[in-house]
Length: 250
Image (cartoon, rainbow, N blue to C red; front, side, top):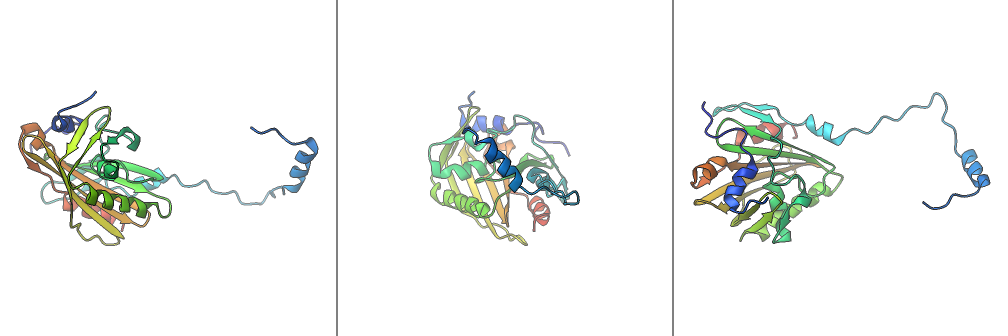
């Protein structure tokens, strides 16, 4: 199938069109004290077991990511986004006119929510104009729940829209509202949102976010064709991608 838009198109380029404003020690003790501490410290025996190194959270997350998705429409490849594709590569690089809306800005710029231990991003592409970004993040106990709560509050508080800025671009969202998230086996909670941005009509973007224990997966879909061709467009989160990735988590 002929691709309607170049796969290498960066989201920054798309959002720049929409926003219309692209930017560019303490002293030691005595020797006697040191000697006493050494004597008090037991010496490991030769047969003592060696502690295993802690697992790398990012490597553990990578094992949970899909690499391809079968679809009746067109199969998806799932790869790392191109370098420079993002409007921001960290939460700190985004500023907002409404601080409460920060979690929505993270979700629509495929940044992790809250305070994760590790996160990874992948792009699901089936040769059409709708791109879906998958952000997978793992958290310490309680932090995933807090991140979801922040997103829910942002979706409710930012219905009139907000503006997010970085050194690369400035994006104005004219509206945000919650939608019904699809059921997901094993998921503890889920949130779905739809956001709009004014450009040559209305560009509609969607997110679906699921928590599985201490892991959160966020899907963000955007139709690049609307921006490129100067027409209104509606992106939907592909069910096949969500089903395949959630199956790895639930």
